[in-house]
Length: 439
Image (cartoon, rainbow, N blue to C red; front, side):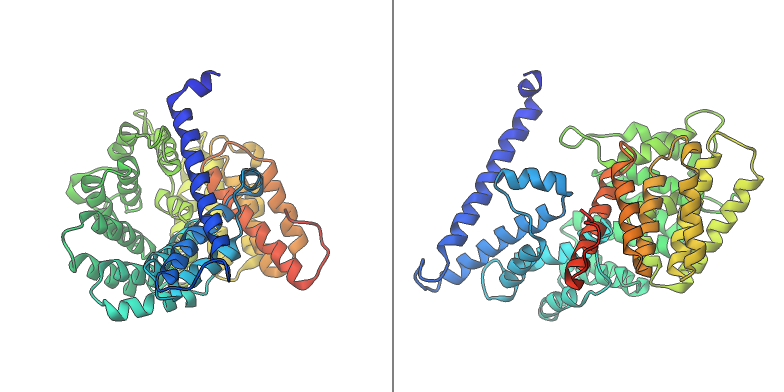
């Protein structure tokens, strides 16, 4: 009862009921527009487009949830069929109706953001480019379409082309400053992929001064980029990474009663700099890059991978030469995880497997960064999938899913595990195999 008296809980329940009512209305409308249930008219195509948007958005969004949550939602009357949701949105996007643009925008967000950040996307961007192309041809100076064009180039690994698109998107309009912030965020990562840490810092600095979404994250990224520079290199604006790391917790905020997971992660990592004697983070920019699934971008360009591998090797050397500390095993395992990812993309599968296995074998010696073990198991399972060893992959995914709880960025890892298991299940069904169920 005390929980029900809590205003946040009551509002949450009220919001859930409203969302469910909205979904049921869309579902009822969908049954009404079946053949012979509704007369044809010039307005019908617009109604169908709106229904396709609603039904498609609900199904696509809910399908991304892990099976346990999805079963509860389905019990409450929702449905979460990804293929059906995509089919509805495609139908709405490709027919001349008032909501075609909204369907297109939602699909573009799914292909260029959601699947990328959650690590569940494919390498084929044909559909995203096909959806964007007619709008970009019609409105070549549209900031939002230039932004999506930049996103597609970025995740394809065409970093220089992406930078041009984002910069052009900023230059074509000045009224919507929040849109500039979206471009700054992408430009920050584009320069980080290239190892241009001062340029990445510049955009993180702009965001920290102009945007209020997560100042703790922006300040953390400023410090992370500065820490990647050689000690003797002058810092921009006279700022020092140690002082910036110490400022991060003071910018903590809550959205809907909770802190964003990435902000909580940044604050926890920055605690290492709290005392007068601190142990520096080894490669904080690359660690956060992994959290945003940026290594899939690096994987598209050999020269970027080789530069990142050099950085990791140098960090390993420095860690070995540094005095022993309570963070040593954690830092070693972090470098092994990131090194394994680079080696995987460089097609050195045996070396990558050794790195991921070494992280798993160090499980009991890790003191703080417990997220490393389930993520190492996840990456190792994806390596097995690429080799065709699906049964071993399923076992590792189940272990990562069931044996680890309450670690940093847990939801993101569980989303990726769910996506990998779903993909394996679909593959088994297509091939007609009867292996162990991956669910």
